[in-house]
Amino acid sequence: MEKPTVSILIPTLNAASVFENCLKSISVQNYPKDKIEIIVADGGSSDNTVEIAKRYGAVVVENKLKTGEAGKAAALKACTGEFAALIDSDNILPDSEWLSQMIEPLLKHAEAVGSEPWKYIWRKEDGFIDRYCALIGMNDPFVMFLGNYDRVNLLTGKWTEVEHYEEDMGDYLLLGLDRRGVPTIGANGTVFRTEFLKSRVKGDYLFDIDILAKKIKDKGSVKFIKVKNGIIHTFCGSDVGKFARKQRRRVKDYLFHLNEKKDREFSWGDMDLSGKNPWGMVKFVLSCILVVPLLVQMLVGLFKRFDIAWFFHPVACWITLWVYGTGRVGGYFKSAELSREGWGQ
Image 1 (cartoon, one colour):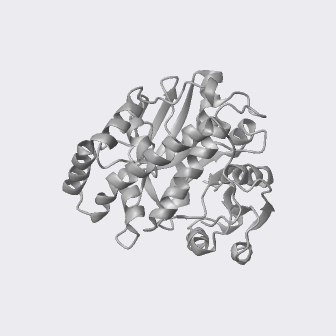
Image 2 (image 1 turned 90 degrees about the vertical axis):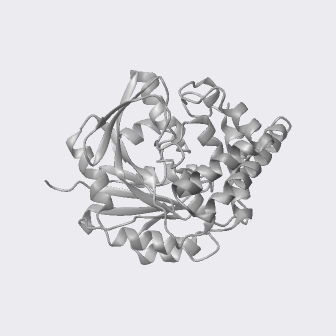
């Protein structure tokens, strides 16, 4: 079967410290080179990010709005491939067959709009925060309490707790997602049919939460594929300060866009498709205050796979509670995207 063309969409901003590892992993894919285009949407990097991108043959476009979501939208407008792979600059494709593994199920199931790895890959050599995130299958521990995560979580043994239809096809799962909820699908190695993606993204931002939710609101359900492979995410290394900054960026931007419909067809405030556990927020807050539930989760994790990275779990939850709590209160007085001036990966 002839391989289809694939566009790799990568938003960047001062990502030189991690970017070469990402591009190198793309360059060694066992996939026809003339079938791959790399579109880098740069937000005005002051380091050598753009130089690295051009060294690997990437097309570089401008991302005036600087954010990752705006960068994805800018790259999407420039891409020409039949499929669009959303890869972040801090992602690493784990082996040379990764791209083929993501595309092949989509060729077998024309009804599926996209595919995504079902786990983050744990590596001994990574920093303890990256290892912790790989173990819980997410970069935000709050999402674990909500249950709408989208990667394998060692504590629960599930890749999501959102109710859905699922058929095991061997190397991948064929999903039916509907009005019961949508996991946080759409980043770190997600592949979409380009035509589908462009039909959902009309403005200056490509938000993960919008893509499948819009399809479900229109049609009632959507088919999707979870491939039983993984992707490496060099999120924060062992830098606790970076983890806190990224959590702050997440909550500030979320609150800014929560009811800002702009050129989107509906605001997040109008959308009830998250599949969130209604008691998740309460459980998260109480667990952080009482401490014991977090320690129990930490001990369960240590028993399932021993790694000192589990000791970061209570700290990650406390940081998240503080940042999200103060961000929510501050959002009542001043709502704005977090400035990217001087930002680095």
